[in-house]
Amino acid sequence: MGVLEVFAPLFGHWQGLEELSASPWSGAGTARAALTFRAEIGGAAVVNDYRQVRDDGSEFLAHGVFLVDPAAGVSWWLFDSYALPPEPATGGWCDGELVLSKTTPRGRAEHRFGLDGDVLTYAIDVTLGDSGPQPFLRGRYGALSGH
Image (cartoon, rainbow, N blue to C red; front, side, top):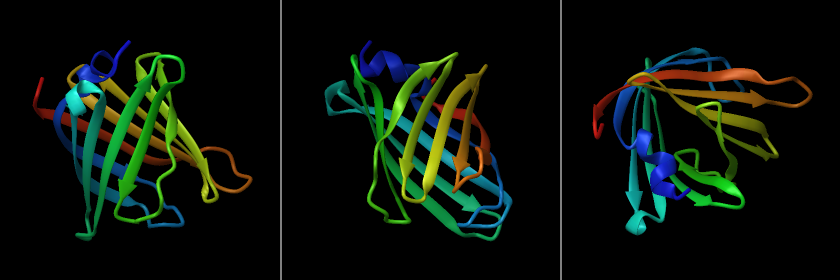
């Protein structure tokens, strides 16, 4: 299956609310976020943009590039406002969710994108040190356009 077929349900502009758990990077709280997904490079890649604004006004920005390899699955490179060198998250679709994970020196993260009717869901769980997976982010977004 090609990149356009894999990502077509996510294409467009989304906006919604997020619940964030306390972490080494920030305290617990809520945020507003906007996401976009679109095909680029003649349909060979999907690009996503993300903007999160926390209740205190601080922002987190990210730009992602997804590629699909029929043999290896989905790879996602995420460049963000923390400016750490990106390492790809890899995975694929499982039970209706796009599940991508990566391990870095900071820990392991699992990202899950899904659709609940007309609502995009996004969840991140992190594993730091010897602990098990912990919720980091839970978001629900309504479609603004593209659907």
